Length: 480
Image (tube, rainbow, N blue to C red; front, side):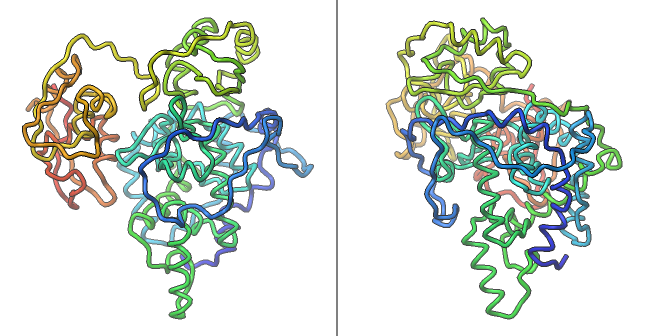
């Protein structure tokens, strides 16, 4: 679809100014709390253009995150949030073959779409509110689906984390703290603020062209500007589809438009979505003293799974020393939790430094020895035995920067070790094969079939996890 920058933006956002405002009001009092400056840096290397070069200035602790809103007539609010989203959605331009191809691909992914929509339930109202507050196209809601499948606690093999899949360096540039106790890339509120702010900046940079903004979110704004300049120099059109960009970037934009069309009328696509109330699922509680989060959740009668779903950014069940800290709790019990938190005695800090993953409780009963095999890396071994790379390094007094030796003995932890030995065996009765499609990676395939990348590598004797070929057949059955 050859469209101008301004036209593409207006086509996707034309109804934003008449969408719902009242559900956002409960979030006007949500304070954007400052945290300690990141105590850790990551080894991620990103192009200098990955984020527009402007300083990140966090509001003071007392500053409210608000934007003045025009006083408009408020329309009737649908009781189902998915229905509200569908009513406010502008149809996608389906003339592009890339969008048609994406729609065809998603027809084989209805189960994954239903599961992602279900996982979106706790976060959807807040993200929907922030998307409208920033006057972004509704298709913004589908970026977390594309990036993480609406898993707030997921960390990719390449180090990208959270709903919006920020790598470490990009998260730091966007003001997301990362230290021994907390990783704000996994924080629902902080990461959504960062993502919507960033996308709004990109929209402004590209004169309101939403497609170019999404492309820049994936490829970096410098790459998009270079492609635009090349086309101008050659006298070619400068709409998104005319640019010479990576296949991954073009595919991401096409799938975003396809998802916009699917969720505009999910039933027509054969997708039955459970209703989501058009009201806040969670509210913030600010903790001003070191707090044992396990104790607080138990006293407040919040089950562990719910607490983890809302607070994946914490690396252990403790706030750590740098306060204040914000936690999210179910909206209906927020006053009770706030009162309990105020009355709890300060909790001493744990003796051990948290590991680099949220809420992993490990009660291993034994140790085992593993000998390094051809193609192994610390990351693959750690995944195979359900361990963290940092645990593997500490157990063996090694560093991920030093190469492994073939046959090198490594101490691993059990009972995860016994599970790993089973992971290479596949039952003939349940074996199934999957043919690699355009846009697939081991990461997307592992999520689709709920197995680990290490299992896919072991079952298929893959020498290089990144060397997938279009049409290649993979064994994807779960282990016996």
